[in-house]
Length: 225
View 1 (cartoon, rainbow, N blue to C red):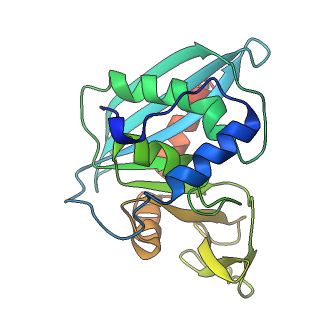
View 2: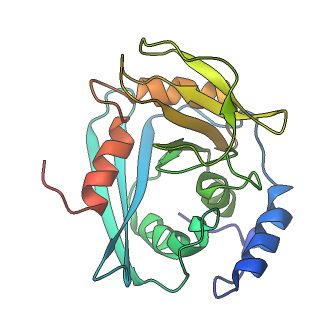
């Protein structure tokens, strides 16, 4: 995957500089559907090695809708940015971009284990990397970073409620499997919230996590099937 030079920026920055970059790039996001037919979906996740000194980014590419594995890659880089909530894309982004650059296949849609618009500055990792690569992208997070459900969530698979922060709908709380903890889904770039929910559910089989996230998480954590 190639970077869009329009939005390139340095990664060796302070937290305050990183926040300023997020706020500047946020204005360039497209949160409506601008994606072609989806035939390949990619899951993106990050783990850490050697006491968090090495960032390990994993990308898996699956067919859609069959969800058959096509390709998987891993990139390892020294960790250079501190752990700061809301700035994880600056800690994980360089390794993710390196991994995406190794792909032989070109995914039509990226699903990140992390936030999209459901972020204090509306610029989570799915937004950030989606914009830098000009790729349709979705944030599928295991935990909530900001916002509250608009109403109580039903227990059945497919039930969802808007996730609201400061009177703005920033994502959705989604029950991906009956009677299990929900996921927090939000648009990243070039995808609307309804479409984000559609593809998240379409990539989810019998597990809580969509196959994209589940397989990328396993690869990032070096867990065996």
